[in-house]
Amino acid sequence: AQSVTQLDSQVPVFEEAPVELRCNYSSSVSVYLFWYVQYPNQGLQLLLKYLSGSTLVKGINGFEAEFNKSQTSFHLRKPSVHISDTAEYFCAVSPSSNTGKLIFGQGTTLQVKP
Amino acid sequence: SQTIHQWPATLVQPVGSPLSLECTVEGTSNPNLYWYRQAAGRGLQLLFYSVGIGQISSEVPQNLSASRPQDRQFILSSKKLLLSDSGFYLCAWAKGRLTDTQYFGPGTRLTVL
Image (cartoon, rainbow over all chains, first blue to last red; front, side, top):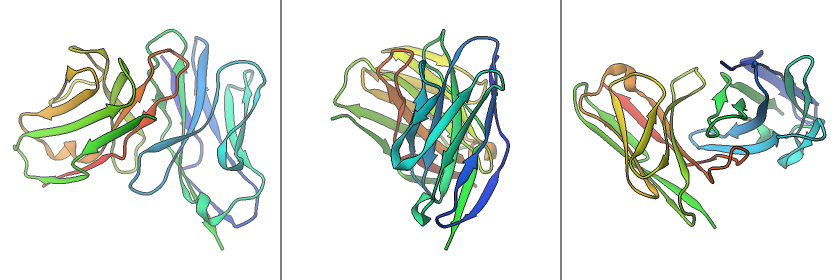
């Protein structure tokens, strides 16, 4: 079975500062990895995904993530955050051998302060 | 382009009442469809998924059920709601291949009193 752990439930940061949201996963099989963002009272929007190839993945809104197989991590980073980045962020894994089911972490609330 | 709709947007129901939430997808055919629940302070829990009309897989035993009467319609139902059914319900679709992104609807906020 697969599981996802997002190590921080809340991350406060000042505007224009860098941020890293941590994600670790557990799986005995190969997986695909995703980061989604959820703005208040809205559905989820895909930020980026790792399927194969380069371990550094660039997404929308200036976010990027790096897949580290040895550490089973997929941390999300942004060099300079904006107020509009305030949202909840979810890391998810999909085992590569099923119907594309996603297993989500508990989420990290990013709070960007002016 | 593809769009996904959910209704109602919000719903307040008494314990023991029935439930019907609807999700429809436009602009694609034969999608995989998913129902998730997001409880307060918790992540997303996959409830049901469907790879075709009439084909439903349940992930979590509960008093909810799902149906797919048409290719792009996915319905979540309950005969008798429990307090623990409160949450934010999200429908999602994907093209069906393992690597495809799941696209989420706007969600339904359900409060059971």
